[in-house]
Image (cartoon, rainbow, N blue to C red; front, side, top):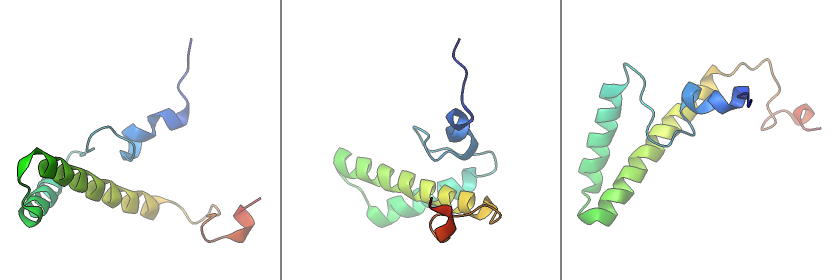
Length: 88
């Protein structure tokens, strides 16, 4: 029997590795605004441009989620990006 590791649930927790855009309840209007704004600015024409536009929206949404995850992390643990003592 396989057991799931805690990291196997990360996509469900923060959505950073989700296969599609991970939109939590209450985030629908913000996502719709990003989608509408990006589509209006890019003005994609044809399947290739529409695909690129969708990828840009997805990347923008994941970067937003990354910022949220970073903000929620406690500074109590050492961060290897800023704390030399964390690198061993």
